[in-house]
Length: 338
Image (cartoon, rainbow, N blue to C red; front, side, top):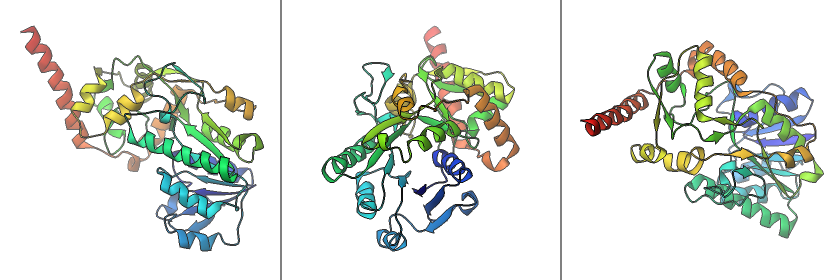
């Protein structure tokens, strides 16, 4: 198989590139080259900024592909550019959308690919929906061979997946746990969530590549394991070898007290229970099964982060904010009981 990935070094795509190269795929990465240390050995690099359409067109002038996948498109204009570049040059174009595009709030907790797309709370999700609508139009009217893939919360060994964290990542929450400090869990921690290891996601993704039954289809790829946020944080604390001290705070309060987009990231996403039905994926890729249980995946992630100080990005501003939020709740409690 001959494939081109736009991006290729992110959380989702890195596991796919690794598995494809191990299987002997002729893989091209269109990449700016700013993260050369992350580029996998064996991939053929087309060094360019995808936004430089003229330069990219020159690089692919004599090339055609079985699959082109864009991992870094977020707005319809970027897909319009991709259509101009790859129409007639690929047998399948894969767009990475988002499971956050599904109806929010849900009318049924079980999510299938037939669940409506609607998220009035998060611009990111609305843009992904608009991207999907553009591609479906090109498929229907021009025969552009699309496949739309919707990941949910996917993680790897480089970052701890959390609900509430700062702009510099999730290490500061782990650091608070290690320092025996309380950590914030949105809501009461009982809403359901799905975490998927990127190696499991990659198995589903690769099974859809070059799959004629996937053309014109939308498919989500997730684990079948469902966890509460309390269980997620407990698993992280257990991997760190510490006791969890959780403080539950409503998502609305967190959004009101922060400059971060918790309206989108929490109210439009993680505050809602999600349970994914992967029947369509398993019909298209019969061999797919997610085998990384979250608590096991977390042990590997924590071990890797603790062994690599460069992954431990501290966020003192977020740390102070957590203390303020928790302190405000304690003060309010005392004021009411006084």
